[in-house]
Each structure stands twice: as structure tokens, then as C-alpha cells.
Length: 447
Image 1 (cartoon, rainbow, N blue to C red):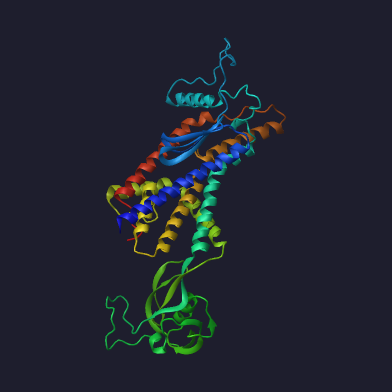
Image 2 (image 1 turned 45 degrees about the vertical axis):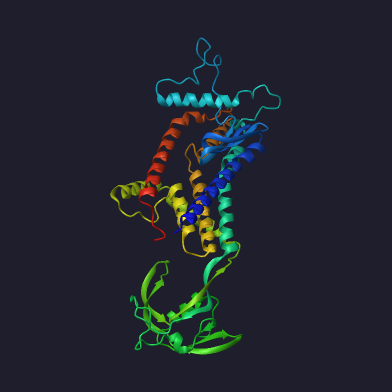
């Protein structure tokens, strides 16, 4: 493992993640601008601002910690009631005044900050209706789903590049090597002894560079198809047609019964007695149909949806493994640190450059799938939480319209700030556990 290659792998993942975040926020920004919402900031990262520039009414910039991003839209919450508009005897309002504890103070602070985003909007010509909460429900949903959808589309593009641009490593029908003899499975010996029997492939006259055309009368397009026929024919002499030097030749081969590692019906590898001839295939990149990339993205999305609700339990198991020193489950969740470490290890492996590029793109595609699914969770401050608030607001309005009642006031999501606080604390706690585990008890995927 070279240090330079490792650093390059980590750097590439960081850049790719920054691009993913930027596109996520653009997915919010474009529809928000299109629907006329006033956007004050578009920022990549958190913490102190490193660079920014104002274009029109929006400030664009980068912050010190590239672990996320945000856009600041006017009126994420409805404005609080001003003094004099309330229902007290002295005319003072009671809404928007928080007291009696931390959570109440948090609600008030959220409302105050939200009111600041609306400051200066009132009274401006043509500026009415530019707050997020004033939009129709479907427009609010489109804005909030825009970010996750951008991550999903990026994942589709990345998987399409891997599957259809680079291709998948596939064992072709061209023979790469032929074993001279048969060595018992499990032995460390690699050289043939005088008493070792010749392999069926060598005895049949197969040579490296031969292209398998058919086996036992069945035309084959992949090495896997040829192997399946061979494995099902132990002890039986079968014809094998190969193309050598531009001409086809028919050879007779008798697979011997041997214990070998084979893939089961469910994809697991198991030991079984099958036909064996002693030849290996040339592995090449084979470009897949253009639909395979999107299909892979959809399949992985379904898998992530299936396990996302298990995330707290999986993080707990990871914490237990960290404390006890046990090896981590290879399927345990990773933090950004773990993903970066994996990218570095992939970049530093002794493999062809195309293999490493393909693996790095796959990792980045998987991260975008995770971002897509995670942001759809119906919890504030995640995008899915804002979608739920908008849908609930629309349901209340539809119900009032059905019963011919006055439209209700907009849903005050500021009241959910305490819930948001709890969610944020939980996310921070899980992140700390995963980062610690990735530093001191990393997942061993590459040996």
C-alpha cells in the first residue's frame, strides 16, 4: 500500500462527496428560485465561511467543514404574531413568546431567526408570496425532494459509468491457462509431480488462447455457461469446440469428479463435488446494457431502504464491537471517515487502474444512494421531515375546504424544533460512534 495512492483515494472521495453535496443543494436551489422563493444563502459545508460571493440576492460560498451544506430560504416557518396582534386584554400577543424551559426557548429562537429571514420582504413591490411557507403544498414538496433526487440521479450516472462505460469484469470464453496436472484441493503445492495425473483440459489438447465455441453441443457465450456444462458432466466424455488460429476444432474432454468451490443458487460459495477440467478464463471488461446501471441503483436503493430502520441497532452493535475489541461486521455502517479509508485502500491496492477507478465510482455511487434514502426519513431537520410537514398542512387545508371552513393557519413547524434537536443529537451521537469505530476498529473488506 503506497501512502501517495492512499491519499489520492481519500482526496478523490472528499471531492466526490463535495460534488454530491453541492448537487444536493442545487436540487433545492433550482426549484426554490423557479418558484420565486427568496434564497439568502447557498453554502457548502458548515462552520466559518472560507469564501463567499453575493450574486443578486443570494450569497454563494464554502465553509470550513465540508460535511454537508444548506440553502437559506425565507419563511421556512410561518412568522410569529407580533405584539399588538394577540388576544391578551392589553393587546399584547402571546404566540411567539417562549418561557418555561430549554425547549420553549429553542422554539422562540427558531421563530426569531425565521422572522429575520422575512425581514425586509414586507412592503417590497412584487415580493409578496416569496416565503417558503406561502407556496402551495406541491411546490414545497418539489423543493424539499429536489436535493435527495439529485443524489439519486448522480448515483444512476455513476453506476451507468461503471456498468456501461467501463464495464464489468467478466470471464470470457477465451482460455487464459491450462493446468498441466491435477493437484488435490487444499494443498499448498503448486508444481506438478511425476505421478500427478494430467488435467482433463491438458489431456484433451486445450491451449491458452483457444476460444470456446460450444460444449457438449451447446453454444456458449460466457465462460460461466461452459463451466456449468462441465461441472454437470463428471466422468462423461463430451465434445468441446474451440476456435484456434481462425479455424474451429472439435476436441473430446472428460471432466473428472473433484471438490471445488462453486456459487450456490443464493449466491453463497460452497464446496461441492463437480466436474473439473483444469482451465481458467481470460477476464475482460465487458460493457453492460445501458439499463443495467439504473437497475443496479434501484436495487441498492431497495436494500438501503430495507436496512435504514435498523441503523440505531447496527450502530449499537458497532459500539459494542469497538468496546470489546471484536472484529466488526463487514456490513456494519460506515462514517465519512470509514468511507474515506476504504477509498484510500482501494486506490492503494495492487490492481489495474481501471479496477480502482471502477471501485471508487461504485463507493461514491453507494454514498449517494445512502444520502438519498437517509434524507427521505420523515424526521426534521431532514428533507423528508419537511415533506411530511407540507403534506400535513395540505391535508388540513383540504379537510377545511371539504367542510367549507375557513383555511387554517399554516402548520407551525417551529413547534417541532425540540424534536429536531433530539434528532440532531442522536445523529451526532451515532456519527461519533461510527467515526471512533472507523478509526480504531475499521471494517476489514480488503484483507
